[in-house]
Length: 152
Image 1 (cartoon, rainbow, N blue to C red):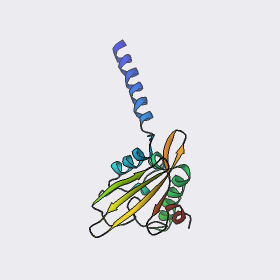
Image 2: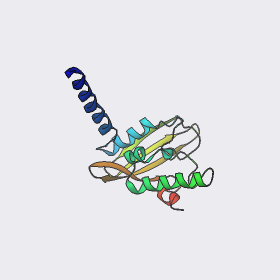
Image 3: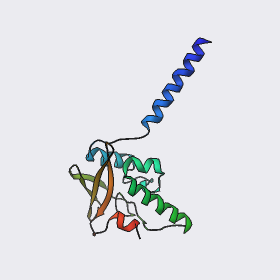
Image 4: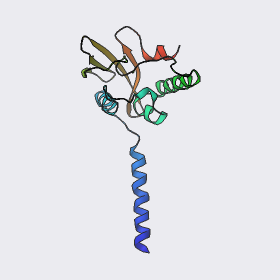
């Protein structure tokens, strides 16, 4: 009986540890963007902009998370697309060949997205929320940025 109680206690401790680790905290701008592209590969089927608050808040600050969730609600109400109709990590619906981090500073990460015929440069504006790095905005080559698009 004591062994069973001890096993249940250990299992409850382990499950507590697992749920605590579900929230990710990135300490550097580069690790944040690398983690984002690792979890949502440029050639994958899943896109970050359709994820829930918990997943979005691992990568985006509160403001951008709320705007992305608002866009999801708008899409549901309108049976489809609202303000964004592309993968926000590649600024396209097409599948690129690869990505490369060109520059990373404390507050900005520049990523080159390579397609067959051209390349796109995406700038991730990085903020600090508590002790974690978060994306505050994404700026694209054509002069647009994600915050402006989501506030339409």
